[in-house]
Length: 615
Image 1 (cartoon, rainbow, N blue to C red):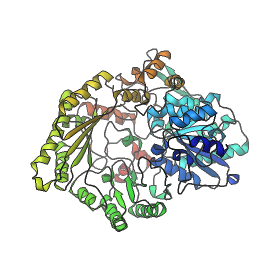
Image 2: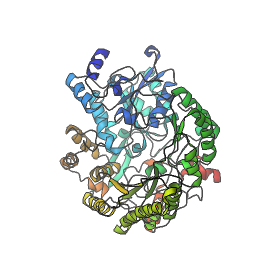
Image 3: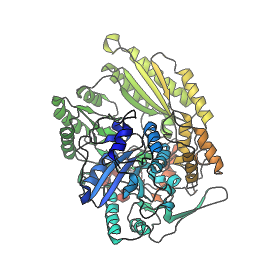
Image 4: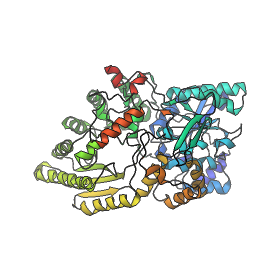
């Protein structure tokens, strides 16, 4: 593509830095020496995509190979899209401004169901056939990975293949097979048959789905001998064996999280029953303190950033957390480098650490009780009590903190208005705690922010069989909280119920939804994760035109024995475990965390992690 054409249209858009590339530490290669060209596509704007750790890891991983060049592309904002369509300019990569339809392979990350329309829009802008059945031998292969890939059925028709699990080894094996396939000059189908034999690779077209008269799934059956009956995710057993990206790209336009991230472990020991990530990323695997400190020093040296964030699902659960934090503070505080410590369980020790972190502002601490009463916290297996929360807030106030954020879900299974009243009561108790401290011993200007999101039942959780509240019910619950959270020191924020409704439909959907996505794409839907663009009526009209009821997927209590759309996917946590946890939830029984007692979820099959070590 001519650079002059791109430069000309970029002069007309709001933020041209989203599309120029040439960031510090961007990879540049000699294309004449490259066998395989890969483009990592993030289906949202640059600022969101460049905050994604997975992009950083895979970009570095691919580009360590001498025979492969990985470039990037993001969803163009509406101003650039309008110009591209007007002048027939195809979507291009940041590194070389190459049209995406000239790459060998394009990989999308599936982080959020409401980004699916952006994927179709990006393929359309790239002049690539949307449906895999329409692609020819000279079209790139379209692949996907990420958390939503574990139920990719609603978008299965658009992807040639899906990778399940962690990509450090898996993606490289796929690349090796592509090079062999290319050199062998085989038909397109032969490449898919090659990689279908690799553990963790799912080729949707190699499977047929049949349905019962009531709309439930009758059977999921493979139609190609190279396909596997059950597809098992891939993991990296020893994270210390991985080469972590330490030449972190430094954007000219600040991303949502403008700091390098140091991944300290994968997985979670907690087992919150609503949390998909906590189950998808099992078993828990930690990196050594020595390797983390080595990577941390290299990240700061290579980027010049003045802040480093520790990344995990629950930072405090890293077994040598305090040693690591102390070492990093000693290393970076004299250099005026701030250490960001998210996902902490607030106690006296962690507050002391936060005090010691250079440049930290005593303005905000976050708690996620998720539910307003202990009964409901037991249902969801949150593992935190009101006493824990109040004790943490009291410590924080006495240490000079004055801004508390509380995150809750509404619409959780078995929720009543007593549980909603519990949210109000807890917020008021925190305010009372603050005022019980003498003025001279507390910071001025208390703000308690209560935020609620709508419960979305997700695949591969104990709540995958549960129904979701309808929009009217959610709106009434939000109104209840608005009416009762009236103290001058309390602010209430809530998420749009309509977006959460469609998220649940897509999360639990089957292959019939592919036709709906084509319809909503034709109606111009994009950026559905952004409230100003989402139009639920276009979605509902598209479902109606396809003869489908969207709420069949999200507002129906599913039988525990029903065949689920993701039945042929194995994440290493058994369906029997999820059934047990569902029944424990209904009985309000708490399951201990993985370090306290193994619950026999099945993840020990991988031969690593907390449970395996205990055995």
